[in-house]
Length: 67
Image 1 (tube, rainbow, N blue to C red):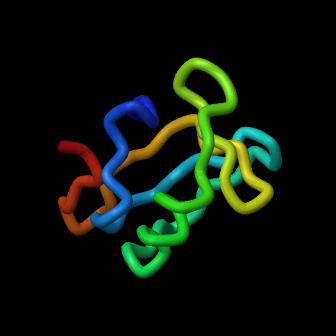
Image 2 (tube, helix red, strand yellow):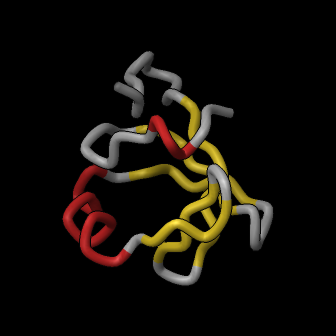
C-alpha cells in the first residue's frame, strides 16, 4: 500500500481502513467531503468519516490515486 501522503481523492482506488482492517473501494465522488473533513491522525494516517485511512493502492483497472 502507498502512503496517504500521496493519496489523490479525485481518482478511484482502494484505501485501507486501519481501524476496521478493511479495504474500501474509493469513489472520487467523496473527494469534496474528504477535503473538507479529513484530518491527519498520525504519520501516514488520515481520520475521515469514522475511518483511519492508512494506505491506498491502485484499482485493478490500472488507475492510480497518486500524484
